[in-house]
Image 1: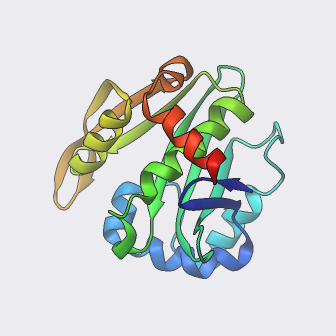
Image 2 (image 1 turned 90 degrees about the vertical axis):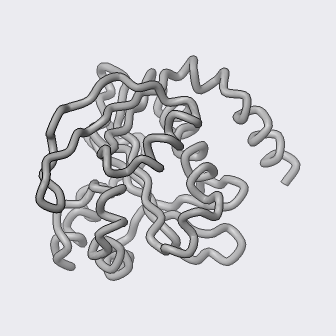
Length: 193
């Protein structure tokens, strides 16, 4: 299992499909997390089956994890590394806290660090990146505050709520991640338990 201070990640399982379907139907959740193909239950189960195979399976280009609250193992979200390009050493990061009451409770930061440790340390990636719609200013602000750098944007890329909006692309190199001041502090607290 992959553990942080507040969360634990475990691979998604078919029985998670009902929870995921509920979250996928939430418009606010969908704006932040778009690593799903459908809101149909059978399609979600198929998506889950396609990402099962183990962390180090070189054929997988997508890893999905349920985010569990550490203190009671309650599912609170999902995260994903997708478009994993092992040849070029990069992947896209997606995070989603499904429970609205927990979206501003500090779980996102903990979740991001656990997922980035997996990406950089276990998978040996050189870079992770995020794609965030301009109508998610909180997501852009938090990613940049964490250490992601703006790499560009796709103009008028998505049609949402009757208008075209931009899609921003942010990246973080492994060397930049290692130098973030929060990382050693966070890891020290984990070691102390």
